[in-house]
Length: 268
Image (cartoon, rainbow, N blue to C red):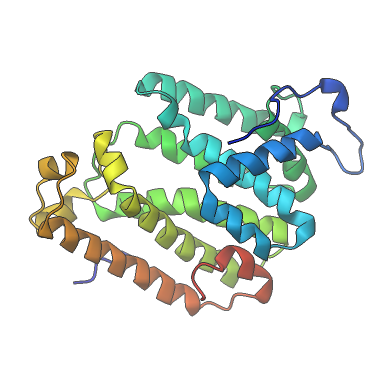
C-alpha cells in the first residue's frame, strides 16, 4: 500500500552596549547569546547538536542560531496548556522575524544570535515565517483528516529548517539541493511526529491522519489513551514506508557535496 501523494544556561541578560553594528557586517551578536544557543540546542535537540560536528567550524554558530530559534518555536506549546497563550508566544516570535531587517529587536539571546545570522547570510524570511506559521495553524487541529496535512506540516517545519541550513552553506542555488532538502525534511518531520506519538497523545493531539487510521482500523480513542495495538503498528509501518519513499526520491536528485551536512541524515 503506497501512501504517497505527490541544562545549564548563561544569563539571559544581554547588555545593549555589547551589541556591535557596522555597515559591512550588519550585526554582531553578544558571545553569551551563542553560548545560550549552544546549551539550548544541546539540551533540547541532541541529534541536531551532534550533527554540528559535520558542519564547517566557521558556520556552526549560525547553524546553532537557526536550530535554537526552531527549538524556541517548537517548544512554545510545552510552556502552556492554554492554546491562546501558546498562540501569543508564537505571534511574539513572528513579530521578531518582522523586526530582523531593522535590527530593532527585543532583548533575548536567541533573537540576538539569529539576527547576526540573518544579516550575514540574508536568510529567507518566508522560511523563518514557515517555522512559526505552521505551528500556529496546527494549534486548532487535533487530528488531521488526510495525509497531505501531515506531509505539509513536516515539510513546512523540518524542510524549512534544512533549506535555511543550505543558505548558510551557500548551497541554496542548486535546484537538486533544494528539492532534496524538501524531500528529506518531509521524511524527517514525519518520522519525528511518529516518534512523538505517545507524547502528543498525552496532550490530546494526533498526527496519524484520520484516513490512515480508518484504513488500518485504528481507534483514535485508544490512541489518545496511549494504548499500543496491532492497528497502531500498521499505521506506523505505513508512515515509515512513506518516509522511505521520500528518502529514495531524494537520493535521485543531483545534489552537491556542499549540501551533505544538512542532508546527512539520509545518505548514510
